[in-house]
Image (tube, rainbow over all chains, first blue to last red; front, side):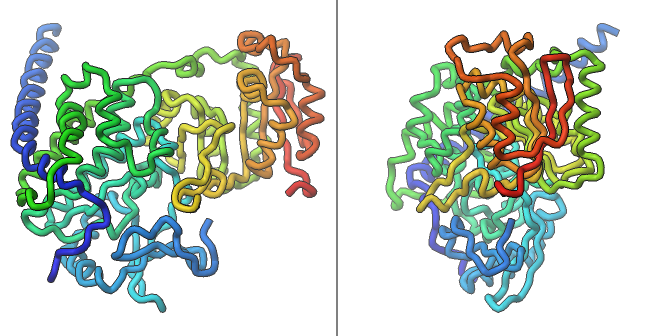
Length: 52
Length: 451
């Protein structure tokens, strides 16, 4: 099957280049954010425990 | 409302793969021959089935008509546009778009565009309606809708998160989205400390007009997933800048005693008894107390208010409402006009919404004093809304009236003038005095001569 078709929106060539550049960076940020949330959750759980 | 004769949807002209048309009060999406192999491939991979199971896509059935293979789609009773949505609604739509992208990519498909006009609120939930936006994914293909997503979803959301006001409204004058350079220039400096705005708006704006197609490299699927995940987690954390307004606590400070409030609710209930409406328009809705009275009496209730924070709160509640309830950020004196190509691409509010009952409680005195609208013009406004009308008149003696009184407005304003102005178009069926000498509730019906 031929997948290539005419694009009916302008994706912006600069935007496509930009996607390639930021992909690694945003992946790293998402990774940090996920672990940061886990750490915050861990401490908030401990705090709840202490109050009991 | 859909036409009985064949009529193509005017706004459906951009996609070469098919178009929407109406026939015999049904909505169809014609698949052009060029897209048929792709459609069959997507169907064979179970992609549509999977998205339908997750309730992300509008339900549809494949039918063979005299126009070839078409998809008959479930009718969305009320079409709404992103410039009528509050912050929460655009946020829900953006998260749906990202979820769809994620689901599609995992199954070897992708969305070829990213516009909130492809999303509608159906059963109080955001639902994707443009079935032909989904196409097979070719490994290495970049996300072509990324820039469009940033301009049409992300820019208004981030601007509404960092600045006062509902920036979704700017999509009415910029139907193709807020240009990234414009969004980046409007954002305050502190937005640079949020990776969502720093990367996808501010830095992206420096690149959006640069580069040539020869520089385009292949982008792996994993990289697109990284971008999607970052956008998703950032958007989930966004909250509207405006969190409180003069009207967000109105429910707790209503100027009625418990008995008066009960009388007001009971009067509305009595008038609705034995009635069945298609669409009810609640103007200046504020909260859902009165909209709830229409449960079982109306197929859908549209609650409009000119306070975006109030609509945000209603939107958060609507997920728990068991009937079709659509809150919209609309000022009744400035409803959405016809817009776009030849003024036919985006229909006006009253072309899409034809209520058979309008309810306007504690609104007349605001229209009179805050907007200087004379009573006869006000009656003309309600005449265009619906056949049935429940409306409250608040007299000059009322404490709330005194608070908003505009001393420069010398137009006639009393119960007799109100009744005279509305009697021109409406028959007054019933009047109930809710608060002695101060507040009156009317049930009116449009006169046959004015229909």
